[in-house]
Length: 273
Image (cartoon, helix red, strand yellow):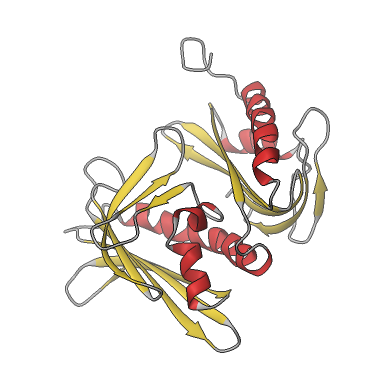
């Protein structure tokens, strides 16, 4: 959906999804550090008005906002200055939960900002397009793993591109080339252990997949490749659930990292080289 404007002229994008659970259960998933980590990115939350929310999108990529309103289990807002990078407008994120019949809730997130022109519209439209995949992981977490411990493996690598070549380097050994929703996949060769079912697949050019994990542990995964500043950023997130998830993550994370390092070695003179 294109960027919209409210009566005051403030711009915003909004995304919503229906998920299983009571308002209290959904609140635990979207408004606490362990809950957010179980389906989005590693998070720390000081849950109160004037508290803080810190989201980690990768090494050195933290986003910190101040909580403005806190109305458990219905609504909270977070203000983030320069949340899209240096020089970006202040963004207010509003999260709401609305109980629906049949034991589900509607979750809605609104990102709002003030600007005199359209210079930030594409940035926020890309944020909007990213939410449905994460909401799919949230929905599955609440349906199958609600309240279970989660260990998230968050990995990132950079490649010179082009994006289609980089994406093929990732997806081919994992059995994910031209993957379709509902397809069972397994990894091969020296790729990390993976057995999964494809839950969400964007067109090949978009390079975005969500998986229902069976191995290395029950859970979910999201794999993406995004063009960024003349390079391609590869993101791999594994959400592992259950009492043994931390042990599995501790064993598997270095295996995945070593594999990514072999696929995309850092240039000489750069960190990791």
